[in-house]
Length: 265
Image 1: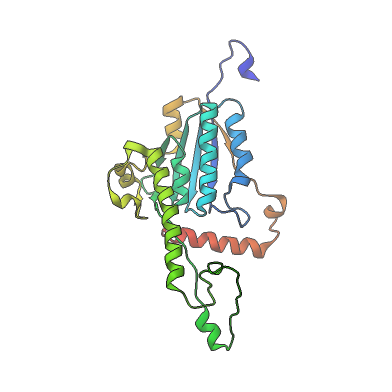
Image 2: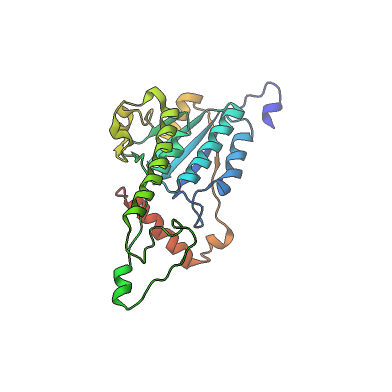
């Protein structure tokens, strides 16, 4: 309301969106487009912010959800002509880096983990265990490719070849996204796209980020000492806050812990 009153000075405002956790459409609490969509829309449209800042702390997850969220950020930024600045906390790896690249500028801590531009598929094989227990796996399909990499049957070379081809296609899409967004900022090194990760200062040298810096100091430098923050993020329901569905929450926590552990966090 104050900005409509003549001669009354208003402070520049930056919308801050927290993107913390594993990216996926499954478990409660994960980052996904359905949950984040309304939050992003509100952050970009409310009160004409000078910029939108993304606080990112994510080891990655679903490439589809990463793409959906990233594309929504880019679309809103273009529609509203609002710059987007990403700030990496502990990690922005794999899908987490996909989200960071949706921003116009990326800043990180000197100890932040950045990168992992690759695609992974992990599973298990239990066919030996079943055999020892005297159990037989029975699967019937219509279509020779309908059943692939069944964890209860021996792994087939043709299934691995087919999965590898799919992963390579997703990897190529990831690489295109990074090259399109980062452009000439990137060093011309093949290792950047091998799934390797780097720590803050080295990531800056490679062009994966624009600099080392934290949220408030960078925003004050860009918009002045009187800059104000308007924060947005996923809110936990009353049931979640009071610990309902403890078993499901515990399982989701284990899965998320495993994702962060890949980077020693």
